[in-house]
Length: 291
Image (cartoon, rainbow, N blue to C red; front, side, top):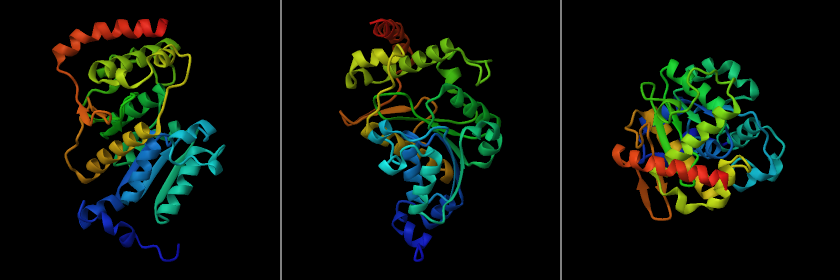
């Protein structure tokens, strides 16, 4: 693109952010692990906001079922590695963008990737990969932006001194290597996250519970819907930009849920109410999975 100018490209950002802040975005590096649904939506927002350097990692290829929600999945990118296809589209937005991509080999380089980044976005839905990302980010003093597996858009921000999800949600994974997880550990961790989502949000009112039971029981893939997925990615992008610019985060390590059906934010319940609800939700999820 012979007439491309970064200044012209980002000119309409000014007013929401200052020119000095735009330069900070230009000089920033963000590592996004998982370039599909939520990760891909966050990437698109960050690229259009003028982030200068991206590190992208994904082990999969785009497939037809991704077309319903993943912003870098098109008919012409089906069967292409997600990280490669994402990079190529990003460069049609900002040809000066610096992009480094990794496939399955990213795990062998994770220390360098996290160390190089200003902030990390977790866009993977694999428990082992998430544990590796969080544990490495803590060791390098880096913040991780993430979202829950929820029917409602959500976001949470885990700083290096905050409890990681496996600690906060009580996963049975502490002390287990990220690549040595048993099927039971994975299942219990998923149930722990589902329990948190049910206790602290109205998600159960916005999803087919019969199908959700099949997901909990491991009988079908997780449901995903474009408005929810893309909205979540936007929330993650906002928090990544806050981190780069040193602005206060809108979310903490507990996060919050956005309910677009009611036009409200749902924040974590107080500890007493959550403790009262948790056994009820646990029994409900157990019955749901059994049915």
